[in-house]
Amino acid sequence: MAGRSLETVSTSTPTAPETDAAKRVLPPKPVAAAIVALSFTLLLYLVELVDVILPGDLDQGGIHSRALSGLDGVLFAPVLHAGWSHLFANTVPVLLFSFLAMAAGFGRFALVTAIIWVASGLGVWLIGPADGVTVGASGLAFGWLAYLLVRGLFNRAAGQIVVAVVLLGVWSGMLAGLLPGNPGVSWQGHLFGALAGVLAAWLTTRRSRKTAPGNLEG
View 1 (cartoon, rainbow, N blue to C red):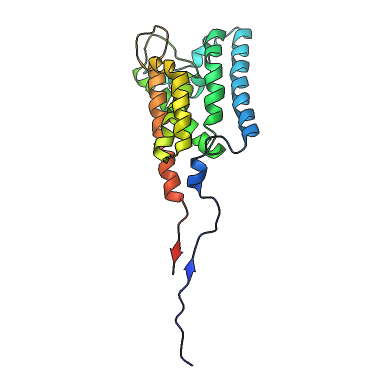
View 2: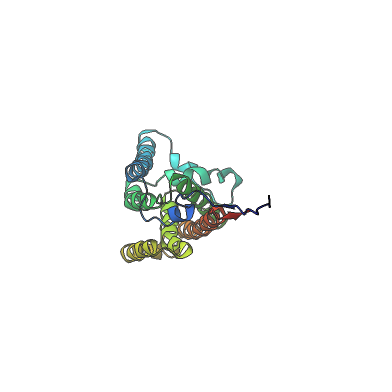
């Protein structure tokens, strides 16, 4: 009996690729995302309350620029604030931007946040004022905002670009915080946070494209 040539074609499982998840506008589990955003914000309030009650000054655990002894402040500075008014000013941006940044899932959000947290802190440590201590979550807020503004461009996602336009229209006044000139405000933390947000958007987009499933032929 004559042999018969067979060609097999293997395709990936027809599930939503990671690139589709990366293009989402809102978190897939909005309630859980809201709980995470609210829990982090409540942590900031709890830390500030402890700082007020205790006789010590927790803010000294912030970033002391160019001092090796102050390098660990990179880890602690975002949860410390120089008073209630400072914390109040950061509350809404932290709540909103962190919630929206969870659109691609909690794992992606954790990675983006880690990049912003470390890069903004190191930027302050490198070029921040040497005669003070830098604290506050505004570096995170600027990083998340920058991430939200550019992710749609990297992902080529129309919905995310629309969200970016809305955010830019509402929060454009924040961009002034990227420039020096306002005493007592860490423009260095804002600037490096924003740059880290752009970097995080680029890195995570590249990762999504590399891990996107494709067809295999054999």
